[in-house]
Image (cartoon, rainbow, N blue to C red; front, side):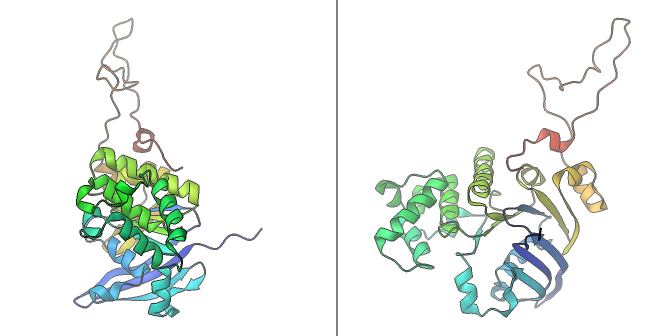
Length: 301
């Protein structure tokens, strides 16, 4: 049986006008329906890679060289008009700050309608079901009151869901989430992560989840790529990245995570009996602490 072609396949190097070598021979593949996490500290080149995939580096005076294939098509050979057709329809992006990503003047319904019409020709009667489906997919109301609201009348979590709804209006094959949960509180972040997992399952959407937060990546992603100083130093499933990291930088990242396991209702570590004695008064050995992946419930795998 022939193996399916990757959804996205790239090998890229990127330079900025005054900063060469921001990305150096970065190689990645995303399979259809896969969630790939990209982890790295600030300045490692994560957002640069997102711009390179969308071929928007020129907005920051950057240039890319190498290979960039989406659904087996070479994106470097496409014109800007062809790329505009792809962006938002086949490849969408969700950014970090939802309220600044929305137009503060326009009502939510108007912004969703504009997003739909950017890649479709049709009447309002055809547009309305697409908006309804997108809002339903992100657990937002489709009533007239909500659609009349402006961004300033939304919570940060609602605004991020609106941004995600706009991104999936045309059911793209690839969604790039660039630090999409970084500006959210812990509860809202958890809700958005579960939403990404749901969209992945229900729509078969591939997701490139870019973050500096290893714990959220561990919960969501099928594979994780570690980016350090413009190079991919390691890539593998969460069990490898957290259980048996190969590269020194990966080991350093994992070692910096909180290692204590969850506490039980008495404030004790589950399975930890080192504080008690056996019948002969001898201290019982401390059992092995849980590894990080065991502590984090998977929401996508």
